[in-house]
Length: 254
Image (cartoon, rainbow, N blue to C red; front, side, top):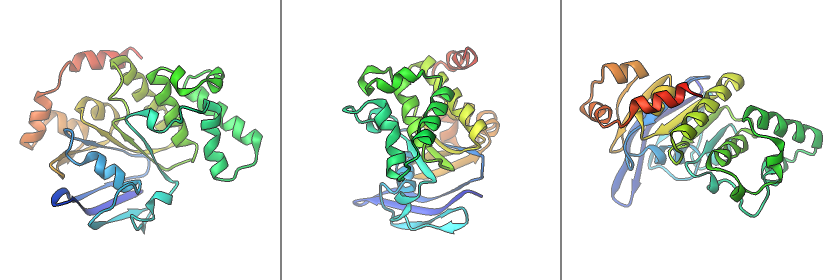
């Protein structure tokens, strides 16, 4: 087991945001958290990357309990945000941005740095001429691919994707989702994939947790969630899905 979280509780002032949230992720597994905005999905991700505190609970990574105050220093857990601009310095070119993780880790092997960046650009179907461009010169999909590469240059074992495709159109979403799947297969990554859209987690995930009001109300495989939902909230999410056939067609066209 790669990651296990037990009974996470989080408060903002007097509001109970996370209520005994528990789930686990196996090595090489893609686990999805789905639910409407404000249900606690992103707060869970922020806890796991050390960006916010918890009132109580346990985080166990590779069999070792981790103090949430120290988890931000765990390079094996990286995150891709909804807005790639939050990860990309608009004043620096892409070459500078992608070299930064190597500098932070005090890597002085320039050939290793260049070969790794070139390899990741090839996996992302990006030309090397992107390196001389600035974030503002790239499309939304290109920026998200750069943000994903940036997260992966630290060689994480767990990648958290928080609404990583929600700002893109259907074609862009499908392209990035298939890029995620290729990376997971090639690099043997584990993912925590967070989305408000059941179609996205159905396409991506091995197991899905449905979250409502800070609690996981149902968990199962994509087929179990889609074909035999148990909780009324899951059923409501499925009924509210717009344009599922359009989304699936876009995926099939990539």
